Length: 355
Image 1 (cartoon, one colour):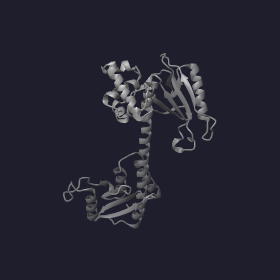
Image 2 (cartoon, one colour):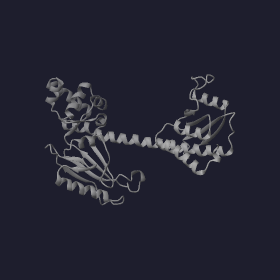
Image 3 (spheres, helix red, strand yellow):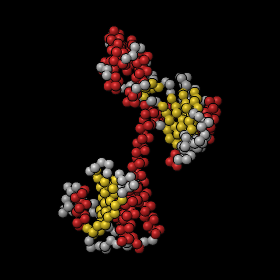
């Protein structure tokens, strides 16, 4: 049965299945197989030409018999397989180029030459399908890029040992970074109860909930509600957690972010950043021995303790420190610590919990 004999409702369901397979992250073979079946075809192929990178072309195939016949051979390239199908079968194709002209999408559908010929309705359907495939592919790529970007930002915050928790408009947790999860699992100052954040101190929790409620009630244009900082007591007796409650501006107007209302930033002052020796050496042009001294001083050790941990004399450590000062243009140990911790070196290594 050809497409023009089907009802509009059936065709709509078919388009929905194609779109769902694209949005659910399925391989391109999945929607192509749906298309092949609907056309009663032998094979369906999508060719994507990347116009930003000349020569970059992607092929997605689906066939009734996935094993190419002996006449084709398993070693044929994708272009050769496409040429073989064009010669062996009766083809129909349609091309779609997005408005930004960054790619070219061509959908090929192949029937056996003994089967019914493709008609004008089939050609029109093919044009509809290639545009749907193109939009689906580009949406999937954008979603993938957004996820990569989100992970990169989250990774940076984790390296700085800043936990981030996103709350929705009811105060429930939408997402928590790895650093935040580690802090919350300790239940020391801040904890999760009923999928909501609670301070472990009842008095401090009232202040915390007030801050969260104020942030949730703020609007995208309400500049009066600013971020609020709180210091939450840790039951362990160590230094308090630092918490920032911040409204997410524009979340009510952005459909993609409509479920995100408040960002909670959490910093444990007991956590210290561990810098990587190789990065210190590369960024400040130090010798391995000098980088080792700088790394330990940045971690809070005295020069004597740094010398002991490296099994070198205090005079040797002092000589390394003088060389570091000369190369860095500084004169004090406190300046060295500030210089290293304010540099990109802290982004190259994960955080560690202070002993």
